[in-house]
Length: 257
Ligand code: PGA
Image (cartoon, rainbow, N blue to C red; front, side, top):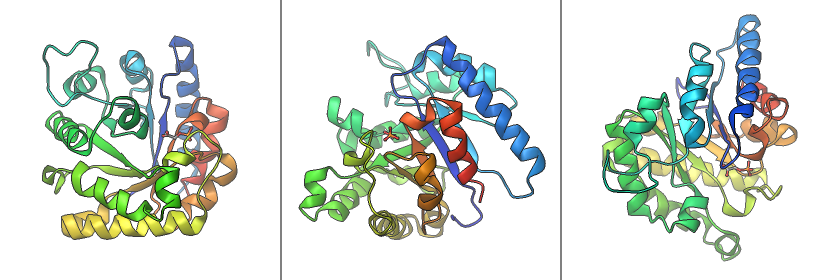
């Protein structure tokens, strides 16, 4: 686990959820509070990243519970003529404290480049949001033996120097594992996480040791414990299995140990 750090278990609701989904988040918060009351170990940090329309209501529903609210993307600029976009300042104003940036679905669907992701990260820092920066290779790239090279390139160009000394998290999400039910082997996850740790310490020195590196891609109750026990796996970014409290809570629980 990261030096002096705490695990981060973050749910990414993607484009799922209307007002009725708030009850799932409330159930998560209630269970986390109960667990916290009778456990001696430091709890993992828990976050839920709903669609932008729910950020404000979720932040109100979870106020005072310790469960954090995050956005799923933010424009690099604070405001402007950018129809349909939301800025980091707007997310912060709505009650978010984190934001996922550079998710592979955005890289693929909106052609977000590494420099574009880096600009968004700078925007998040400007707004005092903690960025969760996503990297990960496609299946073709893995089969070509390029996984480490691709992740290394994404790290080098998606992370601005401004991150030095600032709170942020990294998420390794192999594209072929997202929403597919396929996960890499423990050896594959450990290999990439070790390479990410080396890159982070090479770049940011001692600060790089403190950055949580999350694994994401088909994390569920059945595999969370094994994945979270791997070296340099400091948390999880969870898509499908974060939508219902009954699926998400066993993953949060695995973050305790
Ligand atoms: P998944 O998604 O857990 O549904 O595979 C993870 C993610 O895309 O963050």
